[in-house]
Every structure is written in C-alpha cells, then in structure tokens.
Amino acid sequence: MKPRRNKSSRGNKQRFYCLLLTAYCLLSTAYSLLPTVSWAAISCELNDPDRDTRRLFPESTGYKTNIITILERGGKPLAKKIEERLGDSFEPVYETIDVPHFYYQIFKGKEHIGWVFGVNQKGEYGAIQLILATDLKGKILNFYYQRISSPDAKRFRDKGFLESFKGLTLNDFLNYDPKTEKVNDPASPLSRIKNPIERNDIDFKATLRGIKKNLIQFNEFWSR
Image 1 (tube, one colour):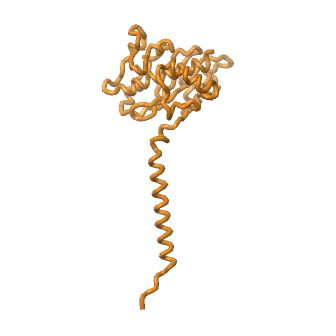
Image 2 (cartoon, one colour):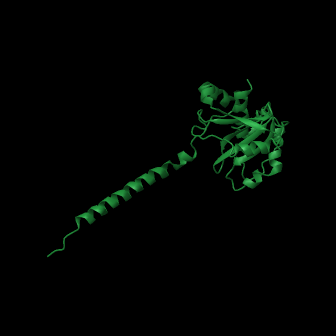
Image 3 (tube, helix red, strand yellow):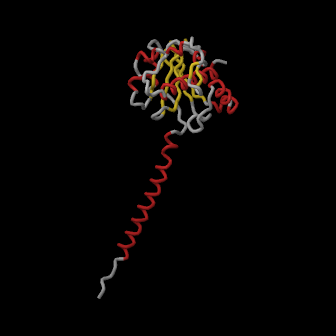
C-alpha cells in the first residue's frame, strides 16, 4: 500500500513558497527604487534647532521657524528667475519647487539679529547639506556642513576653510558660474578660496553652487 500524502502539509508548503516569491518581488521592487528615493526632494532643516541656533548666535534668546516653498511663493516663474540668477538649471529630482526650505529668524529679546538657513546640494558621494548663519542682509557670519559624505569630510570641515567664507555676500557669489565652474571676477574675494582637496573638486564646486543658490533663494524670499 502506498503511503498517503499529507494534503495539509503540501498546502502549507505551497503557501510558504508563494509568500517567499511575493517577498522577493517586493524586495526587488524596493531595491530598484532606492536611487530615486535617496535623491527624492527633501528639506534641509537643522538637526537640533535649539542647540544649533544658540551655537551660531550665542547672544540669542530665541528663534522663529519659517517654512517656505518656491511653489507657494511664485511657482514656476520664480523657479525660472532663480535658475537664471544661479546660472544653472534645477536638478529635476531633488531640486523641485515643492521642497520646503527652513528659515530660522534669530532674536535677542524682541530684536531680530540674524538668520540661519540651509540647502541640499548633490555632491560626489551623496547629498551635502550647507548651513549658513547670516546678518539681516545676508552677509555670511558662519558656515558649516551639516552633512557631507565625502571621505575627505574632515578637510572640508576644517575651521580655516569654513571661515574663509565669512563676510561674503550674494554679490560675491554672483561671480561664480556653475556651468563653467569658474569665478568670473579674479578680484572677487570668492576667487581666493581654494579647494581643500585638490583631487576632489566635485564637492568643492558643489559647495560654491549650493551656497550661491542658498543666498539667491534667501534674497528672493526675504529681501523684497
């Protein structure tokens, strides 16, 4: 007599293999989307606003957070204007006009004393987050990388390199052309800032483009 097959056991195996196949398909789909997700449009807000604003403005007593998008402030016409001033087109994946931009108004008592704001920029090894602290007119008082994935990140975060941006304004960065990757005016203070890593100019040029874009958007949003 042939042994009977256990129908319940066979059914369980079939369901198990179906679940495995479904899980594999889901994981494959998710994996294929990773490059898009990693570069999806995201905001650039401070990691710890209470700590970071106090560090950048030790005399401050508080701050107000403002969240703005190009879409709500002017839509495509404003985006085109910013691109023209930047001298470059927005990257279609992570520089979309619906990206929320965070602007922190810094106060000493009731007096507005400065700003802190940042921007995302594509670097060689991933997203770079560039944070500026400025006076009321947009002159750079402090600059740092909140995020940079370069193996040379320590060199980019060197105090001397970061401080070389102090005192610069939008007018200085208007001399930088992201397409030619050159400073058009050799007399500009911007031309004196040197790449801390000679073999890696991608992140350096990304830094100049990102700061220029950051200052242009600040000017468009707040200096009218």
